[in-house]
Length: 209
Image 1 (cartoon, rainbow, N blue to C red):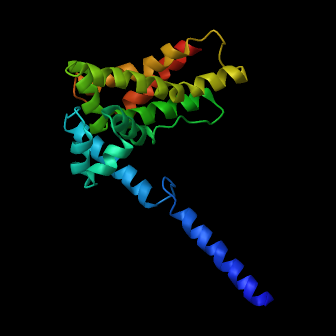
Image 2 (image 1 turned 135 degrees about the vertical axis):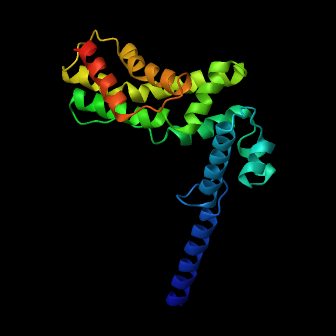
Image 3 (image 1 turned 90 degrees about the horizontal axis):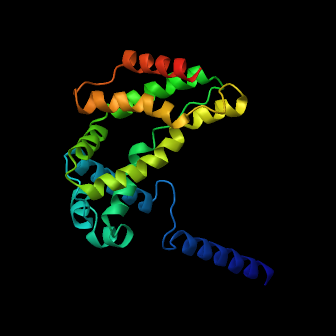
């Protein structure tokens, strides 16, 4: 009798676990929901890379090979799709944290050089520069405000360590790194080289110190 009760308890636990794994909205690394999210983000980025900022759930669903109903349910607006795409796009953009501001700025400049030379980033910056889609521009500005929090972190850590004056204009220092790269890739159509990035890093450090 005891063995039968234990067996039934074990079966019940397994059934509850199985039901939990199938629960709607549950996201597991490498699971179907995560694969769908990545497919949608990559499809949106592919469209943006080709200069198509007028994203719609139907258009992205077709590009991603995902059911329209799925996209409409999870990403009902263009803003939702842009946000998902931007999250994937900027996920590789991380600020170094070596404990040394000079090294952090050099490392950040090199990462930004690769980021702004990416065809997708160039296409989005070109779209903003042409002002053909004001709504897209507004959304990009909003997204960029979040990105600058990441880019400014080495300077804020340096202030906390006492390596940089508390009066330092961190926003301006970040702009000094970013703006020349955007101009170079969008207006002069030149890739940002390692030499370019390190030169900018040195200029920013001279101003910061």
